[in-house]
Length: 206
Image (tube, rainbow, N blue to C red; front, side):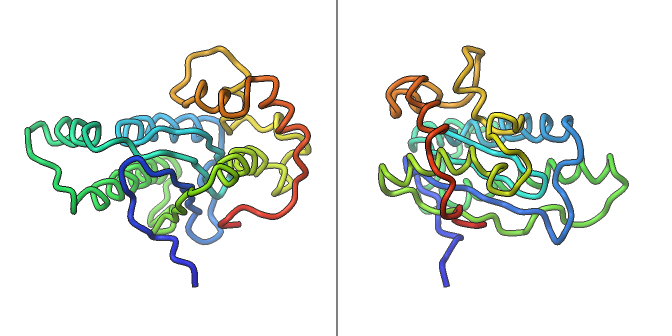
């Protein structure tokens, strides 16, 4: 059985995934999607760089790189409002707690809004280490193509709740846009890759 609860470590790349608990949906309207991304920026931007994401009605995908230890220390001190040292052996737990806080914060607001009780997300989010250039490239595409893969749209550009549009825009973004576009060559190469890639196989956690 694959282990999808591996430790999170500084400067490593990960595919992050979580799913709604049972048959529930995570997002019921556009405001839900927007609010989740706000919460994501609050909890995750201080600890990780984000390269791609897709929010689906009942699950989410992110491609991230955990920040370097000095940046994590700064984020930890800011959160604690103290000069407390973040020990190396505590880093993974700290990072996992920030993701747990993200899911909990969103769930509480969602439950209040919808008169709902109980867990919204699966209790343990999954993560897979991104170790090769090929996997990184494929993952950017497959995350963006997830709505097509699940039959919600016929063209990945028709889905409003992924990072795909941000790479074709010049609007300010928290994504590592320049890094991703340089990886593909330029914005035209990025678009061509996405338009020409056959939708085969499946994502890690589908």
